[in-house]
Length: 367
Image (tube, rainbow, N blue to C red; front, side, top):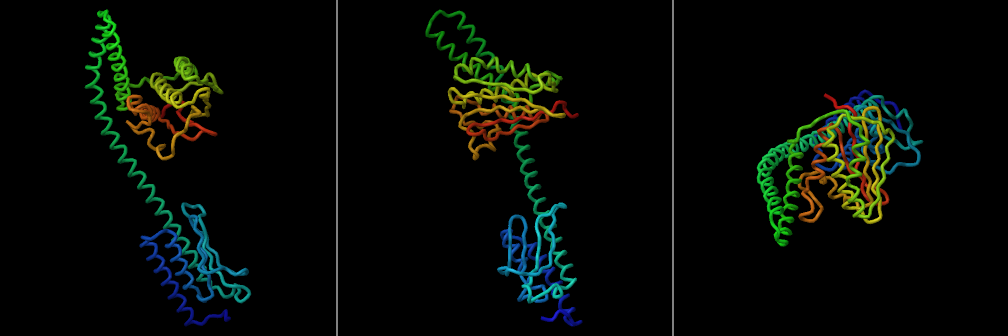
């Protein structure tokens, strides 16, 4: 197999290389098919661009796909190019010839340059595709924020409208309860009072969700607030036949928080954990910290959260509880408070069963 090349052959090779670049640019520009098929088409184009296309084998590895235009023989010689995206290695391109029928002399320096050019094109293409994905995520996030903003305005209006009549219902119901001696009326009035108190709590959550509750940000100790929440929920733990534990490395830890809203977060998460936990199980609360943040984990041994609904648990009015047992605002309120404190919250599986709610909050708010 001749390794030398004439002037006419050199010209033909240049034409093939230019045609190769044009075809690859066309394949990448279309990209209407699957990513795997796009890579297969590129590999085929490359194989035809080399000096001995009938013997050449293109190998392309990128983004989890590994493409070969032919089965690789046991021994080959090859030219190699690295594919990078955002300065990170993402794959490679190789053009093989079977050995010993071919040697390195059968490759042209211009073919190596072509290989590197195609690697650059693929890297750039991958970057564009990743940026498209990020843009789509940002677009969806902006649309969701717009919807939540509108929903916040609506819920704020509802909360204000309901506050006064609920206060009147509760006040007059308590007045009737004090003045009547009729047992049946007293029982009925207690139902009205209980429903009014529940409705008032829903309104309070609506106001939290709508960010209508003013924040009083102060540097406070974390441990006493958590202990107080666990203590106040003591009867709930006892009634549900549950135990709990609390672990904290730094008992003197302080953070810039609104104490009332932080307590609201703890109550909502702990009440949810109590609701889903089976009898004789344990709910664990643990706090750790680093230089800039502190982290709270609340672990239960309940049935866990199905993957299909996990992305929705912080949405307003979404609830898995039976009608009348939950407003669907508890976790959305928690999410809103955590976000307003420049933190984050998410849920993961506990093992062997249950859910872990993880919260990150800064020790000091950024201005």
